[in-house]
Image (cartoon, rainbow, N blue to C red):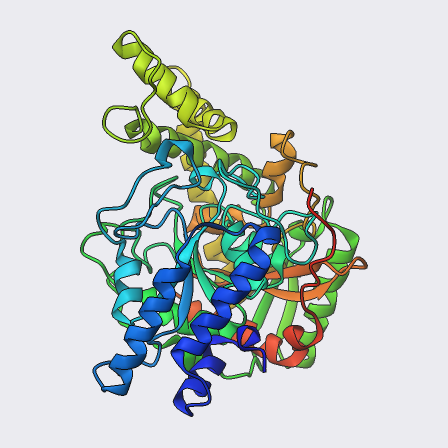
Length: 492
């Protein structure tokens, strides 16, 4: 039995039956990190020694019946923009290279309340700005399916660590597809919850009206389990929704008879890789065979969503990142003679090229004379996007699209072409604009053996609907039983 290939719910069963101990599980993951990290480069701050110590302490408490949580002792990886008390939270930036969080994000409090074990902080695009995890200040994470390709971004470290069995599951954040797109590239499950379902308190902000924390897991059942842990109202987050607590695992009924699935034809047009399209068409036929009603329709937002997203996201980033000035927060240059030079040099040296690009764009669209033409117009289009989705959900329970128009691309092929990189988000950004839940699940591989992701979208707070739709499909096709990362390729 390879411990690290088990899902979390399988690990729970092994712990319950006493086939495994927490120490055995944690040791197996630590050994796998030591084996694969040199190739995958998923961690910024590994916490291996601390994890082993924690495992021993939790094991003793369980034996003394001081802890009875079903998730006690289960390891987890955390994206490095989620504040973790006493541990570096760098956002993969030189600006926060030495920042040790003085408090826990709400999701970390919930993880700790379950007595889970943090295996470390995971790599990402700097300040969550990117689609390939090539924009990290520290390292470039590689895709376990082919080490010459990107794992997606910005939660690429989280997705790669799960795919490489270095963590059983992980937390990521999703501003325009940053959970779903890397999940697609790495052949794992990524869930972006409804905006407000999971507290953002302690998540270092990129774009506050778009950001959302969510799970990256090996299968859909694990995604439901982790969502159970992190979802819920939080008084410390003014955008947190006060909803009744739901057990998402009870939604996994393995039955989609009568489910109405809408296929937005705009997402299957020009720019979608032919093998991705074929794989999605096969998945659509599977849903029909399972008893779902499937219908093509027009969702007339695809032409506007990407531009709208980048205007809003960059404007909010410009505002949020203003605090990192070398005085209040973040890296301070040693090279300055006056206050202006201190600001300029600290930000020039502390931020990477992609972050600077987005700050400049955001500042431009918020500036006098351009605010109405760009930012205000983008907010008006955002309202139209929401209305289009509302209209679609009057007729359909779920919308089905590709997660990404392509499979994972080679490292270095798009990092110098921002526009081409931004197009990687074309299938995912509209979900964030409208504040909807979306999930990416693997639905096949291309001719080179690289995973292809399928995205399911539901109306606000209808996570149960997409989790069941994803689970039913997953049980039918059994992707994990048929495919696994091969670590082919070599260091770039």
